[in-house]
Length: 498
Figure (tube, one colour):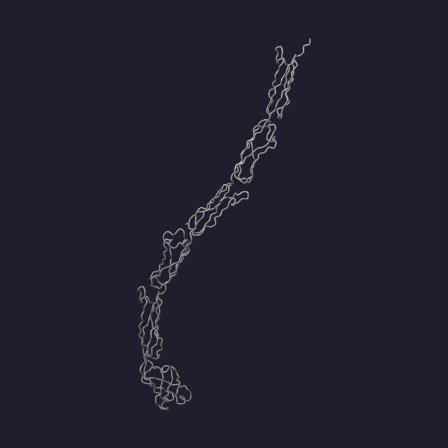
């Protein structure tokens, strides 16, 4: 009798594991044992699969080799399923400033096996919609890529575009009190993408100072609305300097001994309707008094008390000129006799000031008779001329006096001429000597200062007169021709009459 082996069924169980993991322990089910036997009767049992540790995702057969006495082993193969490994890719957040290029984006991976990295992923990238010109804000960073061996989940990151820093330097300015503000200027560093101030919204530079603001320092500030920029402003300063007022003192002059005139001045440079009332009193002084001597004296000005802070005062000094006072020295009119050197005169002085008198005169007063000693009788205007004195602080006006020369009585005049031919026929000029019998002073002088007379025939008058010099007119009396040849009687009874 043939005893055939019993059939023993070896049913391999299906298994699964993740990519990159070790194969699991293979299991199986045995059925068909008889006589109370079990797996211990198996002499060899080996369960195998073609899937190694690096086997890609897929299904792999599980087979077994086994032997058992008295049994025929019927193996039912199983399946090992390699499933994708879970892979978490988290994109890191990033940040940059407006106008800059995007940075290199980074990420963190959790789940790679077998020493692999993102290089095994097909089409791996991290993308964003943000460009260099994108406005300030938050932009998603999204990862992409694929692999059959991994079940990939992506965690997005965020790209934050921050405002660019715009450094604005406001320029310092200055102006004079009362003037309009100058143009308020600035410089800016930090614009990107070819932009300038026109790309800012509501940019302005301002100061609180107006045309009427007082002297001092005023802040110049800048402001703007710019979502893509953070303004870093360094404010400037507007300095209002005092205006310059020019006070020009006026030159003055007066006479010695007079009171000082009103010391006047003119002012220029006030603005905004201001005037001298905005200064704390202008005083003008000089050291000169009524008693000050002739000369030049400084006139000086000053602004008293606290000067207005809005003005700087420049004062131009002037001169007070003290001129000599007029002093009048007048010679009173006088009388002297013809031919007399004796003359008495009186002089008056007027014009002294400051209580002064003739004690300030220097020198000795003298009076000069400008007429000739034997000038004909009569009145001579301004013939007595004073001189010889001077006085500090005075200009002397010498006023001449009139001189009246009175005639003197004489007895007669003898004239000795030449013979008749020389007198009447030879020439119209006769040379003769004349004398008189009156002593004037201590000397006898000729009657005629000139040495000639001109004969003139006064026809129809029965007389013959001579035109001599301005001192005399001699008329011939009723003498005969012969009598007149040697003697001429002069009808003039007064010596010195014209």
